Length: 527
Ligand SMILES: Cc1cc2nc3c(=O)[nH]c(=O)nc-3n(C[C@H](O)[C@H](O)[C@H](O)COP(=O)(O)OP(=O)(O)OC[C@H]3O[C@@H](n4cnc5c(N)ncnc54)[C@H](O)[C@@H]3O)c2cc1C
View (cartoon, rainbow, N blue to C red):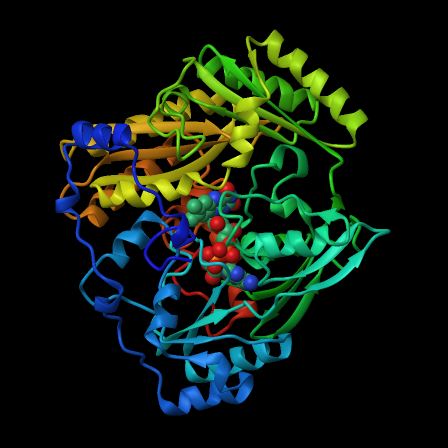
């Protein structure tokens, strides 16, 4: 992955002339005002580890799996949030982990954690490096140094049971590699976040990720049947029997979403399904967002079973961010675009599709046919490539997300829009706020915002101030601090509001029980 941008450098894109003109005219910005630094000019904090520390780590995993080289520390210096990308552009010394270590077995992980405990070194687990909430910030938390613990060598399909429809996947497998290994046997996991091409199985579990097919296959935490985790206290396997049980609180829930603070996840057992026989897409137009949201609610509550169900608001529809090529081309149709997809055996797909169509029509939807849905599917992972040229041309672009109950959805959307608009207005810039619903439940839904305005002065300070006021607005209007991006360093100050002081104490007590020296991912999740 590119060190200072999203994704595959070969897929880097430019802004279309229409979009470039829009950005320059609307935000009054120019590429000349944006700082940048060439890779060979980047300066990293020097490694704080001693030769003795390195020798101890090497004794566990071998010299070839321990490195302090800058070209390995730099890509593990953070994730892929806009703040991360802005930090990468700095010509000042950048914070980076002191060493990168890649263990290959649970036993090696355990021995590394023991060494780090003894030597007071913080451990930041590294999966695909796609965190957008500061989950990978190389924070030492008062310890002597930071070890980036790369899970890349946990890369096998450990088991597939075709009777139980369960697979055990190594935590370091990327989304595509996991699906490739399963597809070779005729199965699919069906977890497709927009970061799918890079994010890992362990990362999905550690952040409670949600994929674009969540309406049909559920969030990642719905898919998990068991986890193998290594803590400084020892190795733990949770979710023993595969089926539901009543043996006290479900310990899997302690590790799902624990963001490397309680353990290193080394393997995840998930439910899988047979590769779908049929896939059918259909796009819809709704006159406005409120009408479309009511239609999505009707479908979610009736349980008619689409695999994908999403709705863009008027602004997102008009900018048509469905494809990088079309961005800025303007909508042909107005209103709000919705996408549905159905997967599975042909007979079932037909029934579920017909029932969903009836509901959407009854709630004010007009079918646009399959084409726009198929287009969305073809380009579903491309959108993030637009952020880099937008940043380079002086726009400040970021995404954020939340969730709430249906009855609160429109009010929360307005509150976030107002907070963003006020934040940009304070530095004399207009703002564009695009929104969509992409994860629905019978009781509520997520809201996902893409935000753009003009960079003014220190863009890191500028975004941090806007983000703080958005987080406050989420809390004031009953929104979750996050629906699927997780907490990391960026949301931790709002965790007491989210789960209460006693809730925070419970998590701290778990942390103390599993990681008494506090070496695991300091500064994340827990306020
Ligand atoms: C362009 C883009 C689009 C995105 N789209 C989505 C989306 O659609 N849905 C979604 O849910 N998220 C999305 N994300 C966020 C991100 O991809 C997810 O949080 C993902 O689950 C992170 O996986 P990863 O393997 O990259 O983990 P990393 O970024 O490497 O790590 C994330 C956090 O988990 C910890 N961690 C990682 N692996 C382990 C492990 N094995 N054991 C213990 N802790 C671990 C890390 O220390 C860190 O705190 C997106 C991000 C980007 C940049």
